[in-house]
Each structure stands twice: as structure tokens, then as C-alpha cells.
Length: 279
Image 1 (tube, rainbow, N blue to C red):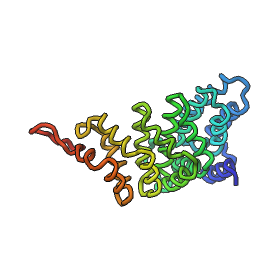
Image 2 (cartoon, rainbow, N blue to C red):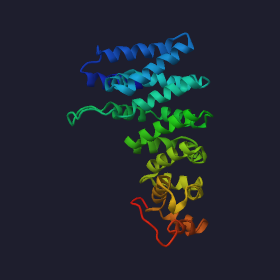
Image 3 (cartoon, rainbow, N blue to C red):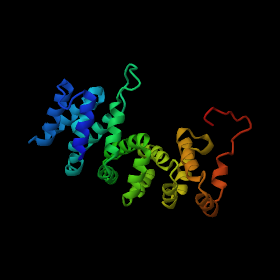
Image 4 (cartoon, rainbow, N blue to C red):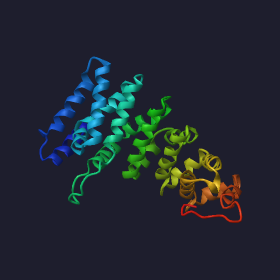
């Protein structure tokens, strides 16, 4: 079964039939048609902006998007790479489709559109490969939105994403390169790598081979070490993933950098040092 058929089948089940006449369903369909078949680039960009708005604000819109939207927007990411505004809009829409919308508590078995969309997109290894390739783009927002999408997928489908990223040539290398990017992207990459390395020994070894120890300790030093805030904490959580229950990484740290950089984090400044909860 292809991707579009799977989406339509799942959403048809959710709506109760495969030809839902909901207003959101028909509106999303019209917008997707404008994106796919529009003649004027500006009209296509406008349609993407309208689609992003309804997907960000409406759970029904998220469901409708899941039925038909992914193949269209992945096509934009593949075929329209030179149109940065359109690529940005497609990525921001995907972020919205994967982000849960707050609502009044309903039945425990109620379908969560964002989680369903995450599950469906994570099944497509070609889509993951396409997203990873976007990390080499020059535009800041293209890289930032792409990392947000990958983090959402890893949060909800970690095993599937770990397997997919392992199978993609230079997949982990591209993610590691983001640690040397601008601060906002670097911080997003830290979170992503923490999810990626959780209970994944093979990935942990590759990440360390790609220079993780040097990059992590460099970031912690930049952020003030023991005086640092949440970024230092994120670095330590990633470091914990790489070392806990991974004997080869422990040996490598000892034989390359030694323990001094880690011990230095514990050095407190001043005799009247005050501990916050985070410290």
C-alpha cells in the first residue's frame, strides 16, 4: 500500500468513512490542489501559508492533512528546492501537523492527529532521507524547521527513526554538523541527538566517532561550565547517554580526553556557592 492510500485509509477510519464531507477536509483538499497544480508561484506560496494556518489551529485540519497532505508537501521539498519561501512554508506546515494542539480533555481512546501523523510520516524512510538532506541547505529556517520535524518524529517513534537514520549514508554526520551551527540550531540539535542516542549502542558509537566528546565539552565551556544553564544540562544528558552502559565509549573518553574536562564541571566558584535546583 502506498503512502497516500495508507493515509486515506487511516483517516477514513477516524472520520467514519473515506469520503468525509467535513469543511476542513474539503478546504485542505482545495489548498493541496492549488499547491500541486497552481500555475503562479505566488498563489502556491499563499496556499501553503493558508494550509499551515489551518493545520496549526485545527485538529480536524491535522486529520485532513494526514489523509492527503504529506505526499504533496514532500514533493515540494523534493522538487522546489530553489524556492526557499515555498520550502520554508512546507516545513513549517509539517511542524504544525506533528505538533499536538491543546484541547479539552476527551475520551482516553480519542485519536490524536499529531501523533497519528508522526507515526505515518516516520514509516517512510525516503522521507527521512529527504529531510536529512535539507540540513545542508544555507537557509537558517530550513535547517531549523527540519530539526524540529526530526525531533518530533524521534520523540514519538524513536526506534523507527533510529533505524532509518542508521540506514542513510552520512545521516548521523549531518546531524553532528548541526552542533557547530548557530546557537538556536545547535541547541535543537542537542535535544535531537539526546533522543537519537537513547538506548542505541550502535548510534552512540558512531556519534562518538564523529567527535561528540570534543563538541560537547566545547559547548559546555562556551556556556560557562558549572555556571551554565539548560544547555549545559542538555550536554550532560547527551554525554550520559553516550557513556552509560557503553564500555567502549568509556574507554575512548579515558584514552583521548581523559576525565579532567568532566571533573572541571564539578569545580564550584566561591566559598559561598549557592545551589539552584538545576545545579
